[in-house]
Figure 1 (cartoon, rainbow, N blue to C red):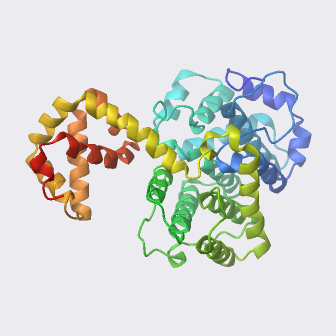
Figure 2: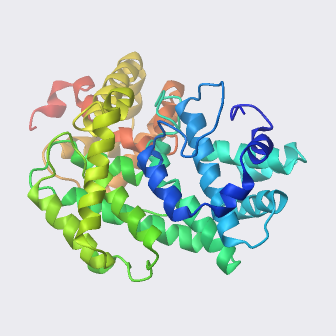
Length: 393
């Protein structure tokens, strides 16, 4: 079975023992998915044993793990289910999640094979960090949110209604909890805010509340009563507070408070933190994301070099375009001596994007999630402008 070629879903459903899949518990499978890293946004192995002569890539392992979890969810929820109905239910489910009705409708026009449609849909759900400039910036951490698909699919099968509200609400709760967790650090380094932005840019349905005064009171957790939902929220938060040193006291207090909010034993909290640390320790060398004490720092360094090259190559034209925008020049000058208001920042962001639209090689800033790089663009621009521009900095 090769997940990179057409027909792999049909072969998966033939080769895997459906009886054993239907008897598998999603709760048990979840622990395996966590052990192989799927819950953490990567897959070092596939969760269920499968004899294959092919050496799978990380992306292929992630595809298999996601589909396995979806199939197990189907057979655990639907009595006397069959593979054809499973594929039909998954396509219907993902069509609900495709709120913009863009890619999936395009897929439907290309093929009549339901399994091939599903293969293309799943392919769009999987993102890798192999080349961050070839991938959409808004999906850098999306794989860590893939299990939302599984929980939302279960919700869809049980309640037989559009799962988008459930998926959006769960994603919002998760991402806002992650923000609170990052904000609980006692000693915040220069890159923790960027990490928040990276995570915020990965969401599919909602926005992260980055209000520094945000608290648990603003996050609805009472509706999450299922053990699997609680474990997933806990494990993703543990991933967010991970670093190559010990979790500091502020983060420990936060995790205990989260456990209390979820009404779960403190032992679960300890196990969740230990699981992340153990996984990273065992697989740090093979997963570039974990090769740095702060992944955001690594991302910042990489993108900083790239943005610098882009600006230098377009120096003359960039200076001309910025100089012709009087409002932008004023805002850039003011940003050197004071903090801009929220409205001023939004205005500067929009005008910078307008400038980037006029220069083809700067189109990367206009892509979804490309606004992550705008602070870097602002950082380098003063070096291009006349010295008088910076005299009051």
